[in-house]
Image (cartoon, rainbow, N blue to C red; front, side):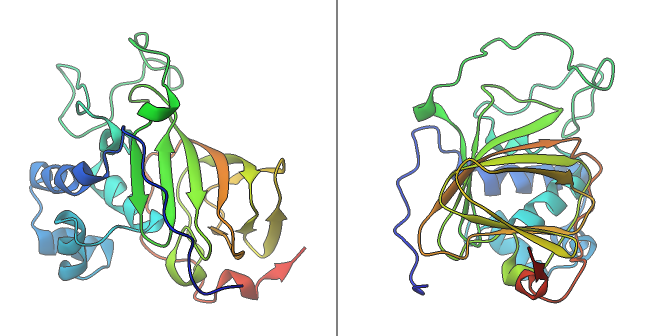
Length: 239
C-alpha cells in the first residue's frame, strides 16, 4: 500500500466545513463552558480543542461525536446552512422535541437534495461526510461517507462506541469494519449493521478511496470520549 493519499476531491457547493468551527464554538459558549472546562470533559488538551474551534485542525469522527454529545447539540446542526430551527419551548443548542420518539413533528419543507448541494464535513484521519437529508433530522444521521487511502474513523485504529445502531453499504473501494473482536472486509455491494455501543472502527487500508452510504439511528446521549481498546483494529481476529 502506498503511503501517499490520493488528492482530495473538491467539495460540492454545499460545503459547510468552514462553518463547523464557528458553530462548535458558539455551542460551547451557549453551554456556559470555558474552553478548558470542555476540553477536560472531552479528555483532550485545551490547545487541541482550540485548534478545532479556530479551524486550524479537524476533529476525528470520535472527537466530533464526543463534542456534540457533550454540548447536547445535533450533528445535523453542524451541516445546516441556516442553523437549527428551535421550537419556542426548546433550549437553544438542544435537539428538537420528537412527538412519539420516532417521527419528528411536522413535515420537511424541502424533501429533495441535489447531489451538488449536499452539505459537507471534512474530518480528520481522511474522512469526509456528506449529509443526505435536505433538512435537519433529529432522529437519524443519513450520510454519504468517503474514506481516503489510509483513512479511519478514529486515529491509530482505536475502537470507540456511542449510542445508536449503524447500517452501511459500500459503494466503491473497500472498507475494513471492526466490531468488537471481529473484523469484516467489505467490498462494493456489501452491507453491514451493528449496535454502535459495541466497540468499533472503520478504516480504508487500501491505496484507493472508498465510498459508502451510512445510516446511524439513535445516536443521542452518546459518550464516546474514551477508546475502548488501546490496540489497533488490525490486531483483531480477521474473518
